[in-house]
Length: 338
Image (cartoon, rainbow, N blue to C red; front, side, top):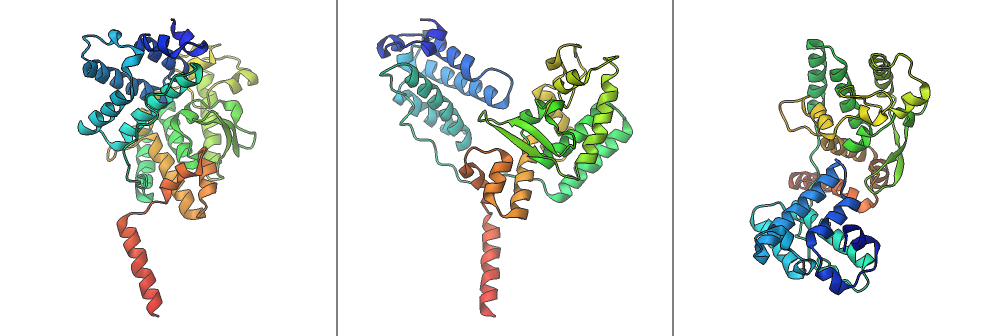
């Protein structure tokens, strides 16, 4: 049975059980975990971790000896216990389990009578904490560092990276959402980014604030100047098909995708703006979310702005530290005594 047949035909559970597990996993990866996005890389890492564990757990010399029947409830439960005992965070283990559950669910949907081996395995309990965010002072320091770097070495790349930081903080976009933006998704007033594809393969419109628009307008002028180094005559239609944040490195005229920044390049673009903390694009998304929640007190508004598929995902931003709870209680008691 080929990899494609496992997902595109109606095999019997018995035949599937005797199939090579690596073939099944390769098929799943082909359909659900290709590309360089953070989610795809995480899924592939989770599956490799499970393969390594299962080979040892079943006592095989090589992973290619593993069969689908070797993947059962017991092995998944032991895998979860193994990951936790080796010091992995509950959140990481929960993600690994979610990958196995999704793979089992896709098989169960394609093969009549097949039961998802990971379905009944419970994820470890995770203590919900409010995501970390940058303080206003930290943001100001980063802005200052970006300006200093640009003065030391004026270049399009450093200027582009500064605007990327500002736009991530202004819109709450995920790193890959921003990386894949095309110029044509901006409206003429630079007020909206249209049809941004979310992790759940849905689309949303993203608002650009009046503070950010002049900075973005200036960047577009610099971007046009940079593109003139490659294109003598760039049509408006072709320009709109190019990425908003371009990379000239190895770019080929006529191939719009060759102008895309790499995922790691974008992370480095943000990371290089500070030496004090481990700055990454998602920290800017957290900062955006918490700032918006604190100013609006509207969890549904924040959920929609972030492009979350379920408001329960957004609820973690409402968590408060113990000291915040203590301070609120003290304040309420003092008010009651008046």
